[in-house]
Amino acid sequence: MGATIVWILFGLGALLCVTNFYLSFLRYPLHRLRGLPKESYHWVSGFPLFGSLFVALSLLGLRDIPAMIPVAIVLMLIDTGGIHWFIGSMIYQFVHEKKRS
Image (tube, rainbow, N blue to C red):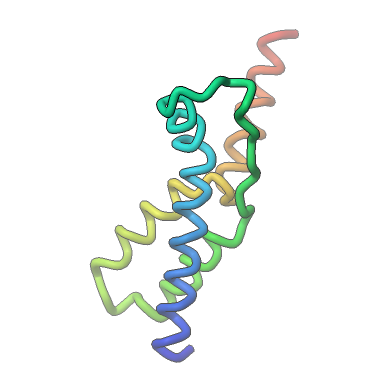
């Protein structure tokens, strides 16, 4: 992969990861901080799978830059649209469903 393509892939993946984090954790509190009522808030879905996938794929070309590895890990961890969040939420629901029974 060319260096330009790798950086574009990383940038797009980072943007998607941060957007998913914002939509999941920051958008509603900021809505309420503006003094807007709960009823006026509308949930918006993020972009599943692609953010973490793009960042992970870009690491194949950026592995020679040591500082990129921790940045990429943080981005992938906060990506609530990532496969790891899906798996974690399924496990969480499974465990809590058993406790209710």
